[in-house]
Image (cartoon, rainbow, N blue to C red):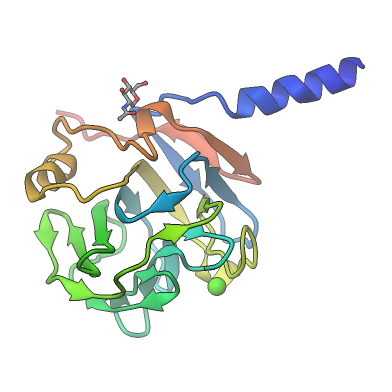
Length: 224
Ligand SMILES: *[C@@H]1O[C@H](CO)[C@@H](O)[C@H](O)[C@H]1NC(C)=O
Ligand SMILES: [Ca+2]
């Protein structure tokens, strides 16, 4: 009985939102296990913006953000493809490529990705610079029990991880919205100025679950 109560309490505690302002997740080793599951109650997205900051020294393909649904392993996937030197985001299992020369290793990068099902257009912003707007898929929303992971890329709903696609490094300020932010809002996010937090994932009130070795640490700021 006491054990059951403890388990129930742990389950409830895991779901209490935490304010991670000034913090980062550290993914300190290459594994096919360590990840953070980000929890949302949203079931359907007809548009979205996903933003995050990250740093890595990986010289290989790696994942930044993975959202699967019951029908699509790559419902929303933000992925660096080293062979082609491009970001290869996916929406509903369809991918496109954005060639970038400025994704340097050992540097923090602010990255925002937008898509809406009306136009089907996707755009990537990196460190304040927008990509061109490219067509990926239109007409249908992304729906059905989303599972969101950072640190690992899902090949199936909640699993199918591969160490060689995992993220090693630090990640912070993960936000997700159910609409497209204006260019000014994106610039504000990138400049670390005031912006309205994500209404799907809010770094200041984040519900998450850590699996294996991922640490919550203070963001390392530059001193003045
Ligand atoms: C995000 O979390 C902060 C801190 O709890 C809260 O003040 C804010 O209203 C939240 N924003 C959204 C859009 O949920
Ligand atoms: Ca994979």
